[in-house]
Length: 358
Image (cartoon, rainbow, N blue to C red):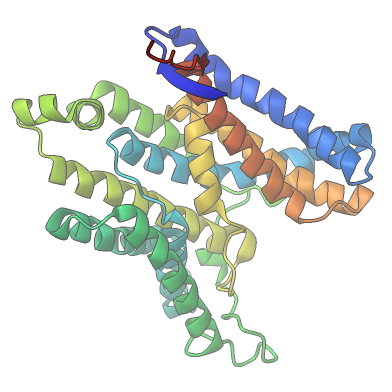
């Protein structure tokens, strides 16, 4: 028995936007089956995973807090994905942004001035852009795959952070722990809701999403990004520079990831530590595709992924669910989404065996 894959001639455009909803629903069902197979009550586990975080003010604040870096990084990656520029190293760019912004805060630890935090943000953006410039240069100059270089640099960034917090940036009064000194109050983001960890970075994240929508939908740069990605031959005919788009999208993605890194160390963490994020740079890839590479969709997808982080933590405490369940859920969602997209674009037919010649 053989199967044949055929492209669909004109799949309905509405399916392109309905498949993320279908993917989430199928993932929830598969997750319930997985929980049951592991010996957990599916109803109670799903409640703690998806509902209980939304029942308290602190839970809602944590939801927005965790969605902020995902949305910021997601819109930066989406710009590159639209142009077929595959930045997979946002986690490393986030780390470099955190390092650059954190070192700025430590250098100005005795300065109490309102310009300290903006300077940290600029340093973080510059750090993320510098890290993204490496795969951009290699791609444009030597046609090296940006997928491999950006991904490998992620691990270099992690090792660099570990080297710094175990060595030059280690707090001498920190009882031997691998961490920097705590930042000064002027280097911390102001809180938005008392009694929670929600800070002003959420407002910046919302502004980034709106700005990305304006750039992608209403400017010539956004038009060039779309044309280079969807019709390279037409882009060359129109005189659009593909190397320029590579540089632009990689630097934009790196800068936004670096800014997200600054907001992590200047917000909920307050210092440099060996681990800055729980994998926001990688999860943002799922966020970008789940949001259909559209800033508004990415914002909604970021909230869903943030809910998976918080719900996973709640389920660990309430029903003793393994920590790895969060990663399994996110990976399962991406798999189902890709499978749904494939079935929208292609159909699988049973191939009839060829008749033997008489």
